[in-house]
Length: 108
Image 1: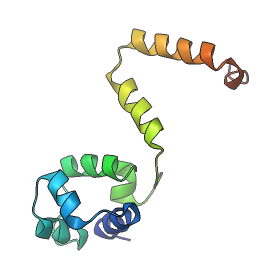
Image 2 (image 1 turned 45 degrees about the vertical axis):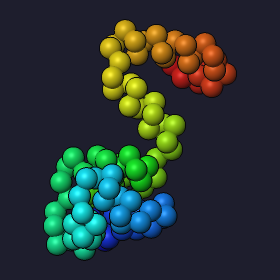
Image 3 (image 1 turned 180 degrees about the vertical axis):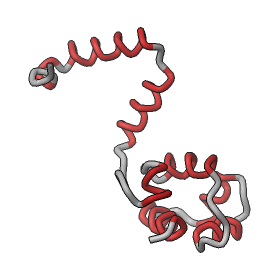
């Protein structure tokens, strides 16, 4: 399956129209059609936006490997973690461990 075919499949799975996605990307609907038909290469900045809209990974979009569907809550946690300082991450982990102690019992 090509990048364009994966994008179309993901868009349809979410029930989005080409116009809806094109508007989110700031491009014309026909440009999105060219991307989905592999006539135009997907730009990296669009891949990031689309991965968020389709709840998938950039890796899956480009290669078809990895996770096709990412839980939106996990995506939110990942986004927050990327923006945290090391100290903020340590605090967040301590809070999670204290709050959900039973879920962390089998870890180190």
